[in-house]
Length: 391
Image (cartoon, rainbow, N blue to C red; front, side, top):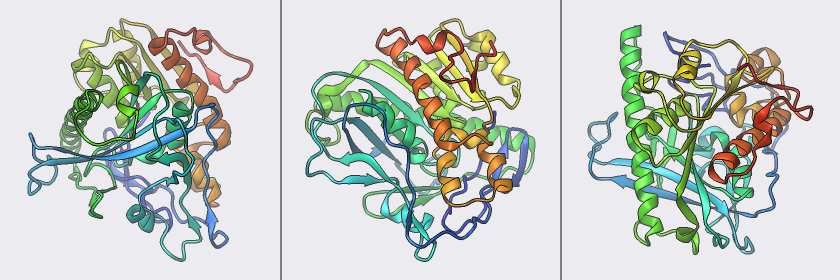
């Protein structure tokens, strides 16, 4: 389990490596590397959602005037971008959203790169379907954007969840605001373990504050206040049924947010190192740890003993840290050489990895937000032999 610290393979189009650090390791290592040439104008794709619900999406520019930006002191208000994915009443006449915003797409896939970013199954501004829906918050890994688990997020929306993804400004590579400004990564680069721990502790605290602000904003929306959203969406938000999912640092954020905010009733960590006070206090609500079978980093065993509510520990064979992001299916489409891709996404087929992860995440959320059986959580399944239950 690792924490992506300082940037994903952000400029995918240029094939530029991005620095990655793990806890206790400040030195960067290469990530995606130089992808092999691809045919001109190849459109990258994500696996289609498996649910019956059509999907709407809307992006929100949120401004927290109560605090300045913790990473860029000149910015006196904390600005965030969030995106809501939800079951739609109709999608006729509403165009599909791109995987990332235009300004970020131009960085990831500039002219001459040979490919373009995916188009999602979310339709911008579509009216929400009737009915109240459980709400799932998503936080990405450090140095990563809110879009990096779109294949998982839109699948949950197709099965009736409202999913809210969060960009943590300046700890993401890129965050584009509606006026075209693009905020870039501004985390300090640690030079020793002490500085790294301090940076990560600050990043965690900032992310928890971001998440709680997003929750407050959703409460305002549900009450008919706050940002304008598509028709029917305020009534769809059931904020008595909230869970949080996160990858890497986002998984640690989910746990720490649960510690301080009881509005979050269940949490899920996708291959992230735990840290923060939650390692001492533990949690009394449902929590799932789903990661690569590459060895416990110590914090998972420690956290496991502190979980006093329903708990689950799953490992997906032949995966690596970025197998829990969209890159597991995008890097192979870019013809990334195996020796560069496998340390990041393992040897499992990317589409198969997504096909296995989706039902387990959904089973957890179904059980603890919808009071459904979630039978996949009870033990190994012959349909998914890659998933192991080590505890």
